Length: 274
Length: 292
Image (cartoon, rainbow over all chains, first blue to last red; front, top):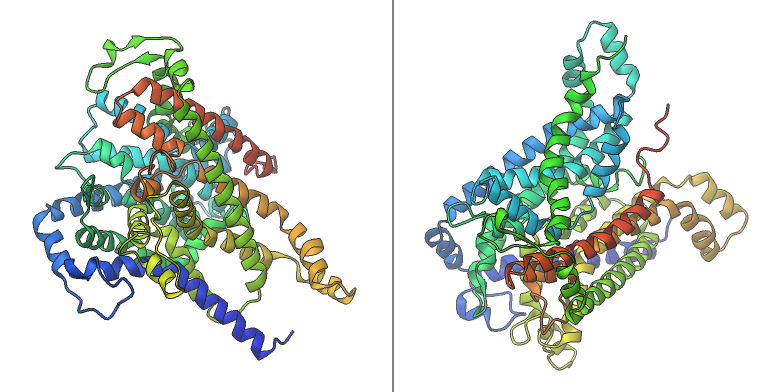
């Protein structure tokens, strides 16, 4: 059906307004990070100010920034890698084999995905203490792997089911061993699911700060924890915290623009086919 | 060929081990901890069994009940606003247009940005003196408001931040669901002379009811998990007007140092979320239909 020009124009106008509403607060973060200290408390609607990198310089120089960046990258990348490997194996096992306890594992996994992190905070602090994992980056990695696995397993479970089992059977007839079937047949076909799972896991591991605040010290802090410490009872150091916020936002922004399609597949998987 | 018994164990075992040790075990420990008096920094062996004392002290504290109430209202208001807005926008904008992929990319940005950055952005924009929102309102000759200083307005502020962040999720789910509706059904109803109203409420929405239900459950469960944005935006204030349960637990544990009581409130929150999850599972069971 052909739509009138007016209708099409209205459609785009609405999309543009919505896009603006979505993006505006993010632009505010970047704009504020480029303001001079004196400008932060004046003329909020004036976006024609002379930008300064002073806030970034302050953040990069003083605050052990490089240390926190390395911590964040380590925690983000290592927990994402481990979650993906364990997650795809478990998804494959649950989808392709029938074994005792399968339902129990499946349902417990599903329930764990809904547990609020606030509930985990106290026991995790206690248990990690016993295991000597407080103030250690591996402690954070273990936590993020554990809390991301339930979602990852279920997301990838759906993707495994979409791979026709006949492909695996054909590969087996052609003489492929189970490991090669898994790595050469299944994994390539699941690439979009793996990308989505990786982004969602990295998003949590890179962004999370409440549990990280409890579990880290001056040496093991991640970037969001360092940023949260700019918020004090005395007020907020806006320029620096926005500079920090902008830097933290960069990797998720890149992922979003590179892999929007995979993210949307991941968001809608399980509820909407196709 | 029969698969050896160790094969499923090889695939599922490692993930199950990690989840059991570092996710399920902490959750179960929350139950255990709620029966003990334990102080941070002391060994667990020095903990004292106190029976139901923590529950008594948690449930006799009016702040716990007001916090539960705040949580329920927050979840109800946010989720209904997000569902209505998301569905309405999807119905208005479901027609495929060029460049939609680009717009969708912009729409998922609020979900991908760090909660700490989201909280900060809104806290800065809601500021009474130098905030963007009061400045925009001033253009319409509306007097500046102390958004984060007034209990009601602060609650509105956390709702706005959540609606901003999650309405796009509902929108994207609904656009995908509507795109999946069999177009021949729509065509048939059009030929039968259905009005826009009938087509929407009698044909399209019933056909995507399943997705609406799942989206609703996902949003509800996540609404009870919100913590970080509110931590940054209001830290529960002013007073306890925006102190949702998750934040109340955090404060009781790490500001008030009452770990047992915090664990008891955690059990309360877990019960709420578990009930919702049970409902979600009934609506969408990912394991159903796999008895091939």
